[in-house]
Structures are given as structure tokens and as C-alpha cells.
Length: 347
Image (tube, rainbow, N blue to C red):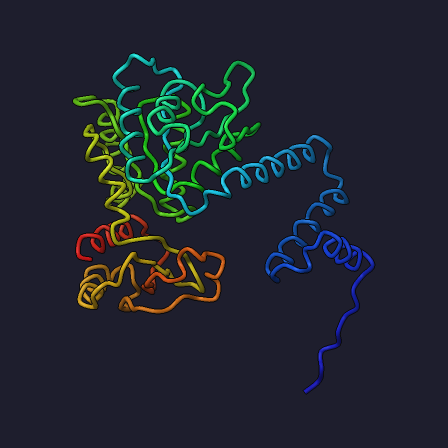
């Protein structure tokens, strides 16, 4: 069998290797080396591609924002967090403000931290309820608003963003749940982006709660619209409605989030399969029941137990958790949410 001829490194490749070595990155794991090299090569390619200066400034600013936000959230990577969305215009003396404050206080009692947009209104209510120690703020710089609210201002857990897209990345990347309160265009933008990313599997499956004041109709009317104009016209499927809950009961909203993590811990796609980590071992009879009830999304293959993959070594907090292996079709995330609900119920 003929040997493959080894190609020599180019001067540029050697220069990049030298830079990585000087930065101390050659002492890190191979994945970090490979990805850092890729970042450097991409940056250099942008410079040689003739990309206009304004576009280079955009990429540079976005990357710096991402780096700063990663540093902000890094020390709290294992803490569960709930992102709170809602209007900046909500008055502190309104029922909606009190509801957001009380919800955040209740969820903080269950050891969740709270992420808000750091502004006034519902955002300030969320930070106030959780308290400064359990609050994050991801502030957007706008010409007419907004400075960070008094609860989170000057805190190390406050990140500033120029761009909405980098800001929204961290709202969901760092979140274990999302709670939405009445709001305007921005709230609905966040609402639909959250639902879209969860529906398509582009972010982790998390509880999404639409919470209104008792007997309030804000989200009930929205839900009716979804049923009448999206579901009835088959623009979404019936199972997509399982991705969220609309309620005007504070206790129900809190339970929707805490119950989701009663047995289920987290999940990860590895080698074309879905690995679900659980907080404790699940009886095999439960796995048999789930395999039967959800065969339509499991390629007719039963759920099995297994140990951790090598790829999971970057999540040491999950190292000792039991694991379930699912041949999930990677499409029907509403049904997957139903499966997790059933796992929590039976387990």
C-alpha cells in the first residue's frame, strides 16, 4: 500500500504555530489548539479577502463582545439561570412589575440565577427580585436608552453589547429556562427567536414560560393567535405547542421550570445520537415505556443506558451522571419535550 506523502507546512502555517506557542496555547488540549488556529486563520483570511473596513470593524467588535461576555459568565458556568424578558416601559407600581419581581425572587429560592437585559421595567423587576448576588445583566447600548438599572449597575455580572445578535446569543446560551412577561416589539422578537431556536434544535431544549398577571389576557390572546393562524394553517405542528406554557399562575410558572430538572439534567448531541444526562438512575421499566410511547421519534430503537463519551470531558460537572442514549430523529423537538416531561413524571 502506497504511503501518503506528507506535505510540508507553509511559512504562514509555521508563523501561526509560532504565535500559538508564544501565547502558551501549545500546552493546552488539542481541540483548543485546533480551534484557536482556525480563529487566527479566519481573521487573516478576512484581511486578505478585501473585506471592507466597516465589515472588519463589525466582526472585530462582535468578537470582543463575545470574549467579554464569556469572561462575565465563565465563573458561573455550572449555575442554572433563567432569562427574564419583558418591557422596559413597565411601571414599578404596576401588577406586571410586581409579578416579575416575585417570580424572580421565587426562582432564586430554588438556586436559579436570573438574566435580564439590565434595563428598567420588567428587567429591573427581575434583578430586584433575584437580588444583586443572583443577577446578571446583558445591557444593549442604544442612542436613547438604556443605562443599566440600579440593581445590576457596576456589577461584575453585567455585560455591555453594541449588537443585538451577540446579546441575544448570551440570553439563550447561558439560560436553563426562559420566562416572558408582557412587552413590546423587543419582547416578541425574543419570544419568537427563542421558540424558533428551540423548535429547530439550534439551542438547548429549555422550559419556556409566558407569565401574565392573574386573569390577564396578554399571552392568552397571543396563544389564541398562534393556534388560529399558525397551527390551523399548518405553519407549525401540534407538538410545537408543547415547547411552551402560558399561565397566569406564579406557582405554576415556577414549577414548570423546577420540575423540568427533577430527573432530566441536560443533553448533548454526540455522533448523531442524543445523550440525555439524568440526576439519578432511571429504572429500566421506565426506559421501556418511553421507548414504546415515543418510538415515532426514536427510529424504532429503544432507549439504552451508557457511560460518558470522550467528547463530554469538557463538562466535568456532568461526569458522574447517568446517561441515556436516544436515536432521536433531530427534528421533532416538541415530541422530545413531551418525552422529557414523561421521563420526569415516571422517573
